[in-house]
Image (cartoon, rainbow, N blue to C red):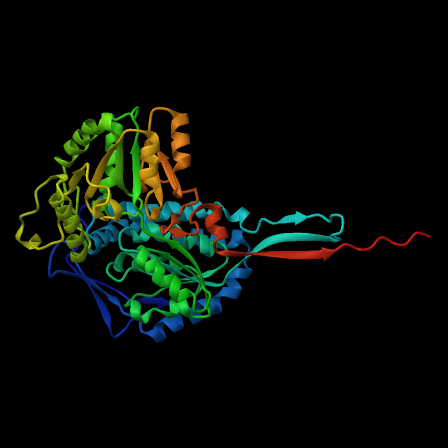
Length: 497
């Protein structure tokens, strides 16, 4: 990873529709969350007519793409990915500026895209796997149960890890035989658009398209009868709006929504440097702005002081600053509104009488004054009814709540609207399986937690209001397919004599 990429020239991106780039009269001005008043670049703002053109292009490309064997689609997708790493340093610098996170995380964002893409291609042999139901008494047919692609799909990604998150579903959709339209986040579209366009240019025209713009002009990506499915990653509120819009044309949805992940630290948990480093990263990576970050810690009362000391020591070494500056370990929040929200959670907890410990020093460089920087905080033994416990903070603050019994911890962990992920920290494998099996969420770690520890081969998704459907793995491919049965009538045996 290079730190010498030139970031002084504003970036400009267009649309990519039907194999061709397209400029627009209107643009989105992309602000730098760390440097108030600085414009990172401008992205094309698609009109409703542009969106209709993207849908039409994807629809026209669908029959030819779907007719290919999965292995042929995989071969073309593999070729389209070649050279993706050559622009990774530049993509990371752009993403860091438009998103706010540190350069290393932005660089990994692109790397994870490549890893997920290649893992998806390994599933080519399973895409068309069918099973045959043999004739049975009273059922004189042989039935083949197989799969077919859905058609045109929309993939909508959020600002926090847009490139990596895109690859949790896009390659699976394409491999299954669908054509796709990608909608990057309107507040951080530049790096994602660049990556998608470079791949789309190497695929048949219309197979992969990318449109950026205001949400108000993008409704057809969900409501059009030519859209078979919308795959959305974002907030619970956003997911509800997507689902409501999709109902107009019964468009299918996969929703990967917010979380309020509980990490359960049992009495026998190992809390050495390795495990504490993992937990710290699980909470504070990307300044806390990851859906599957740990957002509540339940710790056995006998280990409370030890855990608080371990996290405090790491927070004391945190360097809050601009994402591209060498040495920065925690960048700004993405938006002023999110900064205000998280600061409000911290102040509410302090006012309630909970112990609040804040760490680090805000940057003092003139160009960073007024940026979305916030000191990270621990909230120790708060009232469980406080918003810092019940709501998704999506920022650098974590409530730490002591418990006395395993049942108490599990009940508290499950007492949430959310069910995305969770973790169990214990030295005993049987205990881990028992407690982990009781957590109501889609993914459970043992002695670990967080996006960087995700098995990218496994299905991922939430329960309760954390979403519906699964991404990654063969389950992620099946999410972009329909099941089809073909029954063959068995010939009657010739009459005797």
